[in-house]
Image 1 (cartoon, rainbow over the protein chains, first blue to last red):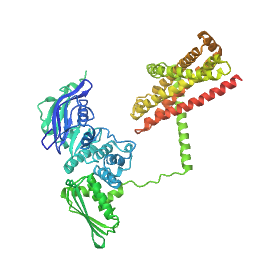
Image 2: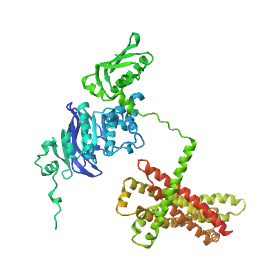
Image 3: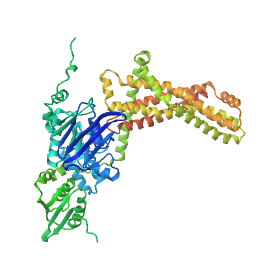
Image 4: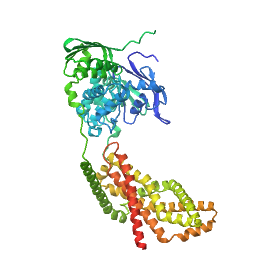
Length: 259
Length: 380
């Protein structure tokens, strides 16, 4: 499939869900090279499922996801492995391997997919950890790290093979504002210095305003995208639900009326 | 001859007089191409006594993480110990990344070799301390169970009977198929094995006595307990262990509900009720297996049943059922105890499950030995 050079991910008429249950349908969007692209929406509306379909963990019910001109859902064997090497993923919990040290976690992709000498593998892993501010935690076990540190270590592991795209699932969820801002700074720094394309699932407004170039908003009722654009522009959206979301306004029906 | 494929990374090493060396790298420094560069540099530089090394990377148009690692390795003088090294010609966009990780960072972060060897005495001391701590924890658990017991038995609201029924169904009713199969086959095996020996004395009829006594006094309770340990002790440990990891036990504590009363007592009660019933069922299935074998040997059903009934006394049945009750308590209590001991970490629940099964089996065998000893002395 031919796409303009700056399009790295192209989602076409995608329907996702579990079994017969459809969560989102007819989803279309594109992610450009080097941009920080955020998928947002209320809890349980299928943001993470959409991301997991994009990275090939879940098969689409309908439609296609094209990654740099190749369809990951239909790719098999070596072709699938080649596509998987193009991106790294940070899961919501970090998903570090608990039986390995932080350094071993970051080294794992290098051990499995490169023939680099041991000395260089260690240097690559340590430099990635330094990049995310965790050089001093190299020899710790994941259980010894805080939530924010685990997410940073997961980003270092996702970056081990220098992928061009990083998928982050809720990078700021459950973190204090300072740690959350630190992750935002890391993401924008990596995008700026290394030209990495980010696809981020989030509903943290502060984080979205700080780093996102473009966002799409998915909705449970509409089962699709209800808004797309720069975060600042969506603040003034005509749709009342989108307007409330971006201005952090409560639904009046949720207020408690004294009896 | 086809033209050679273009090399993505060229490595040129020039060794000059008085230990001067110059390395020129051109092309792409990626994880794939760096491997070849490394091999060439190792061959050329390791053997040479280099005093001063200049690495020219002005011809490098791509540098990935592995490329930077190679440049840093050279820059730290790891390939040319004692030499003064300089990396020149790095493109402006790579310079800040290259300087982002220094030799000082490497020294500070890289894992030091740790001496892990322990003396035998130290290992023995550590193991003894663990056993003592385990026993203390066990005593603490038993104290908790004992203190919850009166309230659970006296106060109808204190014991969660719906939970008891649920566990009873999971541990008991759902175990019926496997208990049936194992016990039937066990009776089958014992009957066949004893039939061969007793045939030598013309006493095959006594297979019925053997199978009845063995199943009622020993194999029925023991086999049921082993199956319960494998199915239920592990399930209790995994369930309570996962609850502990997910902080659900902390939530119970702060709601004012003691985990022992809320989680452990219903399981022990279910274990006490289900184990004797399963034991009786196992005995019957084992005897059925023996009956099948004896029917095959040509004995009539009435004769077999009369022989079986005459060989067993009420005392034997009481011993079998008492064993079932004790084994039921052991299996459920040990499963819950190991679950409560679960630590943090991904392998913690798995470890608790394994320990629950192993400890249950150990305690079951110890209890069985105690039963045998006590009944022997009571009879004599």
